Length: 183
Ligand SMILES: [Ca+2]
Image (cartoon, rainbow, N blue to C red; front, side):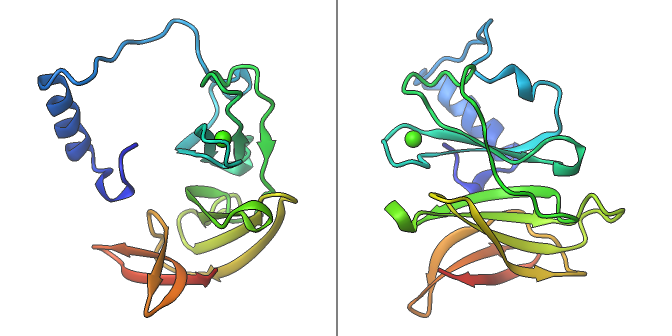
């Protein structure tokens, strides 16, 4: 998986070209989709592979424009990387903050926590806030731990340690360092 720090189209093209030159991998299009047909044609713009349920198989998280019928979902890997018959786990919505940008997880077992970065959408505004949602994985209990509006949206979040404290943060060249929530 490509680190969030290197998502620029230029970098991805360079990486792809290097991989091809070195013949490390080859890519081919599969005829049958590995995704459930229920997500077809929907406005999903964020995809992340994370082992959500800690079974060493990467699971799939999808987010986009929640208010347009593209609910935020987790697809648990059945073991063969084929998600086409997997029933999506629906993550609670955050009204008016319906643009989902990024996911990250912290903790383990009963403390496993999903963090979702959002911005405004669905209330007539678009990209005008900076919101962090925290979801306790085992119960899907959802809390909005930070809601700044109006605020410049930011593109990604990571769990990190700043001054010895575990936090969820972003360090983006356009918006600087943002620190959101304490784990
Ligand atoms: Ca898994």
